[in-house]
Amino acid sequence: MEKNLDQVMDEICSSPDVIGCIFADQQGLCLGAKGKVTNETAGFITAMANQASKLEPNNQMPIIVLENDTQLCMIRKTGPSGTSTGAIYKKKLA
Image 1 (cartoon, rainbow, N blue to C red):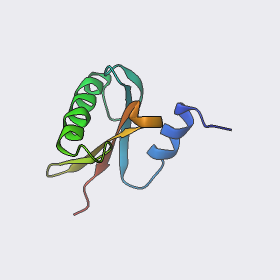
Image 2: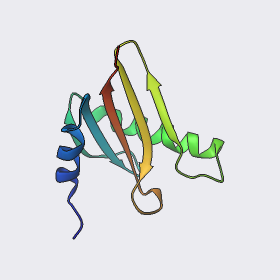
Image 3: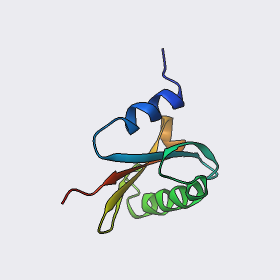
Image 4: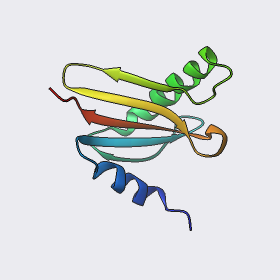
């Protein structure tokens, strides 16, 4: 039986150093968000994943990692054939 998105987000957010996660559909509409993230980022993560896919045409699901002094954001298309996009935010280890 397939887990629902809420359960998946709970599992992700219970991982060490994870501060939040968000999932969006192909149009960038937020499917769900947990932790310290805002629904407004859903469109941005979808757009970045779509553009990264154009850089790697033979690999439709590249992983994008954005980093600053305190955290990491990992973005990747998910679901069957990349039908959605997910981002996980983690505290950066010192």
